[in-house]
Amino acid sequence: METKPVNSSHWYLLTGLVLGLVVGLVISLFIAPAVNADALPHELDEAGKAVYREQIALAYASNHALNRALSRLDLLKDEDPAAALIAQAQAVVAQGGEVELSRALAELGTAVQELALPLSP
View 1: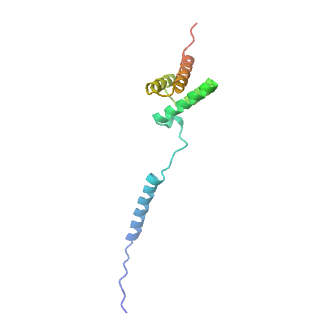
View 2: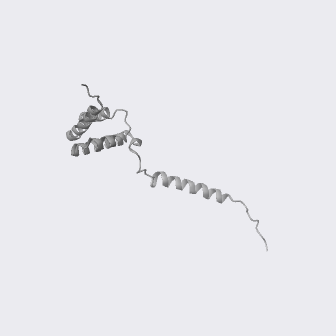
View 3: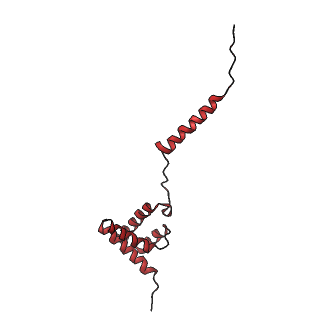
């Protein structure tokens, strides 16, 4: 009876590991990427911050709760929230956006700006 020499090579383990890593990477990056739904407002990109400001301005236009709007704007951590709101209102007008949206942004920007100005005697 003839016996064949046993190949004691374990290359199949390394090949399986590499293939598993490649398949896992493809799945996690392209097929089912992870979405961070719990991002803080200051972590958003500029487009996301613009949408957040729009929502704050529309909420302020409906209920005029300035303290609530200010607390929401603080979450964006803008250096000058009033200037950001007014600039966004001007951008909406320049792009031919909704008049109600630009009016709400400008109204909130003006209210924030007036609150920041010191009262003179």
